[in-house]
Image (cartoon, rainbow, N blue to C red; front, side, top):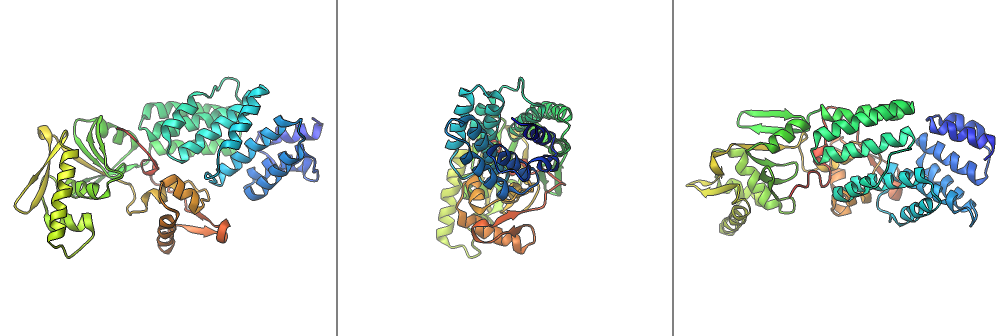
Amino acid sequence: MDSLIAASARALATGDPLAALKRIALRDDPPALALRGIAMAQLGEHARARELLRRAARGFGARESLSRARCIVAEAEVALAVRDIGSSPRALMAALATLKSHADHVNASQARLLAVRRLLLLGRLDEADAALAQIDTQGMPPSMEAMAAMAAAELALRSLRIDAARAAFARALAAAERARVPALLAEVREARTALDRPAARRLFAGGEHSLRLDEVAALLAADILVVDACRRGVGIGAAWRSLARRPVLFALARALAEAWPGDVERDRLIARAFHTRDPDESHRARLRVEIGRLRALVKTVAQIDATARGFVLRPLDDRQLALLVPPIDGDQAALVALLSDGMAWSTSALALALGTSQRTVQRALVELELAGRVRAIGQTRTRRWLSPPLAEFTTILLLPAALSIE
């Protein structure tokens, strides 16, 4: 490695891409192209960064498989930054195998960490937890150690393990301070504020109360019946019944919880569950069927009784009931939560993360754009969607597969 390449690499490691480019901006050899790509990524020019990294990978010869694998890992990190999460991870896994065979443990750990972050974006929390457990932070550069701790903190937050999240943020902050990279330090400090911002709202008959993540965790651990509109489920502690894939049943459960301890009229339940203002006998018959299904699902934690007007939800053993709703209103709350990270998302990536169709996401984005809550950049296939960061509250409970407790 010549002196200019070494100096450029040191500048990039400290988060100074301009100093790196001063040394290699006019060079077209593969090592210089790779470092230029990383520098452009740090400057936010992601499309140009991916092009340079691909050129660098092609430029390395057949005997330079290690350098080519490093370029693939770097490009995967850029792809993650632009939320290109739909492509197959096979290339990254192949690069990981090459790095391990050459005993390049630092870059192999970086590849594993990228895989963990991709799984977190997709909401595959169990897989992310298993992959994160394979990463050994011993001997890592401080900046990479900070990112590993950040991934652990996000996983803990989305599982409502607040003490573990605080410990992970403390490790991330200490590592970021050792790394002396201002952008990384700012990212860690901003992410840590999620612990102190409102994460959900508890509705009462006379109003609502904002809850932080630790307060949500305490409420879910208490001996009360919780109807959770963030996770879309009903339960008491570990006795949890998910209704995320049964929207009609959850609509009924939420309507009953909103009226607790009173009952709800049949016509109102029909309007909430079936979205009609002119109910007929077929709707009433269907309501009886759906109430029966909901009654069977929640029989271990509550009972649903018929009244003269409609139905009432009664927690077993005279327990209290709490209704949790997202910190922001609207059917597109999960979509807004994904976009609130400030990154540019494609509709295909959003659909993949939310587990829905791309057409559904496109319709929702049009509505949000008309409301001024999101904006688009680019045209046709290069179009990406952005939303300003929601700094006044945390949307961690709205992210895909959050709190998947069974």
